[in-house]
Image (cartoon, rainbow, N blue to C red; front, side, top):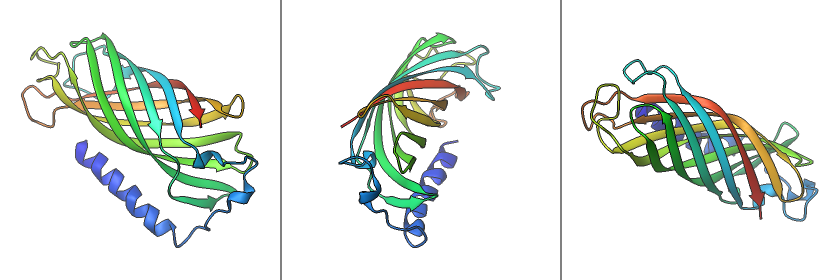
Length: 205
């Protein structure tokens, strides 16, 4: 899974270079705002309620409540696409996750991801996908079906849509996937995959 995530990130990095020769460079005059929202920074609070999927070696019945605080940089790479604007931001996310049901009781970590976004010309909503990963700590117990050590790597991907309530504040809804494992650094290493709905509030500045 970690190799797949790394390949995914390398693919999007290469895509940024290749798209530069195919897509039109955007004109910031098309934005209805004095500062287009892709040129603004973002702070975000969000939460996802997740269920275990496709994890045959992990204990049954995992339920995870993923609380996240995310900072998104101003958009760097930007191109006009499908009548709107495509852009990529850098993001850093703090994770605080009570494990409501499972072997462990919590997970605390960080994740670093690009945020790939598409904005229509009126900038009243946006589409996004953010694939990436990081690391963190849990309270492992070394039992069958649970994590083999406290230090754990993660993969975090979410996708969805954001709608603006006013000039600076948006509500986002989407779906989130998360993977925990220790990359074979200890035994057991069952790997845990979870997925579930996500909701959040974003402030642009």
